[in-house]
Length: 352
Image 1 (cartoon, rainbow, N blue to C red):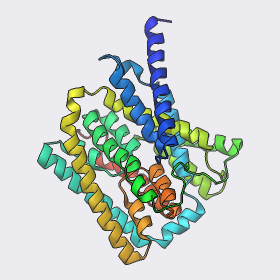
Image 2 (image 1 turned 90 degrees about the vertical axis):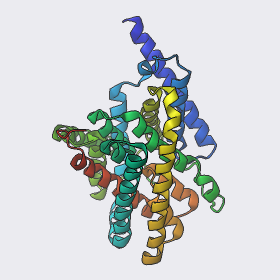
Image 3 (image 1 turned 180 degrees about the vertical axis):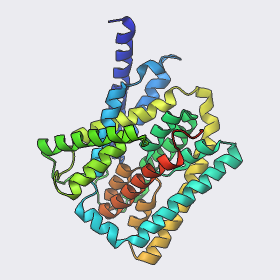
Image 4 (image 1 turned 45 degrees about the vertical axis):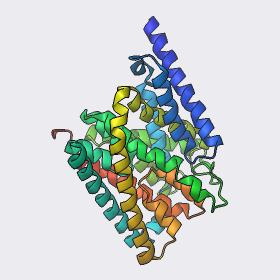
């Protein structure tokens, strides 16, 4: 084997260890979704300290990332249980309000990026979609658009939500901010877990052949959801395996920053902050309207409508002491809805 192979292996291992170190630190500090956000920061720090040009060599192997996507999809699909489906039927107005919020956030933020910063339409829409970060980045990679600005805007929103918002709200809650998604639930047995992964891989490969965006992630989500709804494979993914998957995905997200010229970071912060602020204000407005119209709790509505990631918002719900099922259903519907809309908005044969 060549020296280059061992160098790439060493750099990738170092990046992964940095992600684990920061993830463990964030988790120990009680930051919700600490493993995910910490892994993002760890990958960015590793890329910054490397000499220029070496960041590309530190990228994780593609099969490892795709395996993590499948596991993440299995974790997300496990939230779609018979109880969750019953909750969906109980909150039609709330889910309608969520749909309108996603549309308004995407349109408003896209117009902001196009009019103020001169972004192209495709780049602006991908940066503005509130949630489904992994699917958005997967589509961005496939279409070869200007990936780094999209990743910065999307990741800034996620990082602020998972790292800053929980602190003030956790003061009013007795929940454990270090709780993992699925904590306290029945763990899937080896057979059920293997079935979920195998089914996710099969459906993901079918989706890939059909040209669906983020096929492995969405395929595993759908397969896992069907297995849980039918109770063929009940139980959640072991927390250690779920944590490992989110660390790898965090590295995948963080890698988007490491190849960006460092002098290009600062000009993008204005766009990132603007998108975050616009999305937060609009989402909060729809959440408060839902509180008035539907009668759900303010905490439930604010977390359910927050433009953040599924797993992070479920943990935030646990911190706040609000209903994680209500929050999980809304973010799952948002994730699947955005994921299914992406192939329509960005067909492979359409110009970027």
